[in-house]
Length: 291
Image (cartoon, rainbow, N blue to C red):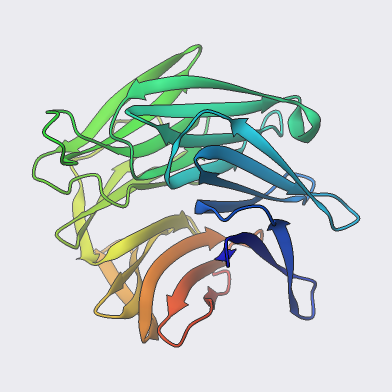
């Protein structure tokens, strides 16, 4: 998170939360936190430059540029390649969706490429069943200055395969999110006029036409340990989750009196955690144990 123009990480030591300064020189937007395969905490964030920071065992943070030239910093996504353990970041630079990989791992060198010319203000990323990066993002295909499409780009070999999941009214593609489970199923979401649409793709299949899940914004998506898809969202100052129990989408309340910023993650045991902003200030976490 950002405090007084400083990027700060909150870490759990098994007993209590403690904070460490990640970047004392500037704040950041679109902050995304992820653990490296060896458990190293790391952060990607934007502030004109696209930046990446990772924690040394002695508690100091190493801060470096993914890309030095000016980038857009609303959202980015940080994921580790499951095959190589290399950090990868998706972000927007001007009118381009960009993808960068730190070849060689934490001590390697960043290499960046353009995925597509797109209005990718909202971005999320996952690795699919075949170990390929898949990025969900918003776009403005008619060039009128308003977002109106949800897309997914998957790197197949050396090229990016672009799929449009939905194109329509102003707002399509907002809060784009994506997740995959171990069986190869995938879900992608966006919210138009606070109507959350969920698109599903089975292993070896194609994306469906989408279904309505709930009313909300600030989306996060994940599968729990049983393979059930979940979407976190905020609506009417309440953080909730929607899940598909096989008969349709059901809703559970996480907490009342919240402002937004829901982020949904799965833990190693298959449980789920929701990160959000309480009205009273600070950071809230809601947890659901593994099924």
